[in-house]
Image (cartoon, helix red, strand yellow):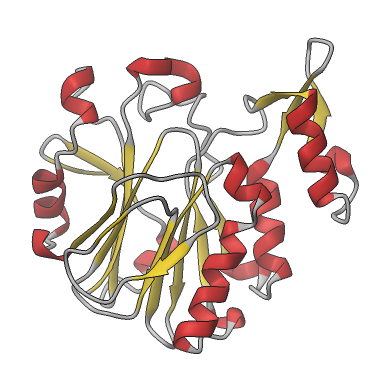
Length: 249
């Protein structure tokens, strides 16, 4: 965990190996637990802490739990109804917001291309992580064997409980993966099941060609750590949002 003033955030050691080329973070609640203040994005403090320029900020106004990933070509772009961003431009920060959904940081150190993906359970079913990699391959000529993927804090298999209808969607979509008990298990109540979306996202990234050693899991459950990380499952309408940012220097 890193701290700068009231701003607290997490970083991946794997991506810090390239800190001369990129910077990244996943924000925590920090010292500010007031609902109205937390829900409003204090980007100025965050960008100052990371030594970034605010004019490079790229935001998705509405994350739609889709499978849509777009390229960012200019500073200050605003997108809507999508859930992933990629770019090869320096000085452009890709920013997304989370409260239990899975953040996936993507970086190709050979082509020097970055990506930021928001994968809720619907996005996971639609394989948005793979589509982010496909966009990097198609637009920038990336080789998936070179791409690093870091999977950030998200609701874990210990707390992502779903009903029969959602469980069946996962079974139908991912029946070809290893035995179902690896990512679906029965809950305590009849008709309830726990699903491991982090496991699924890891397997999807391997499936599209990423090396296993280049996929890093944070193994941090947002619900288990609700005192430090915003979690909609735990806090409902009082939940704020965690911000993930990645930028080429």
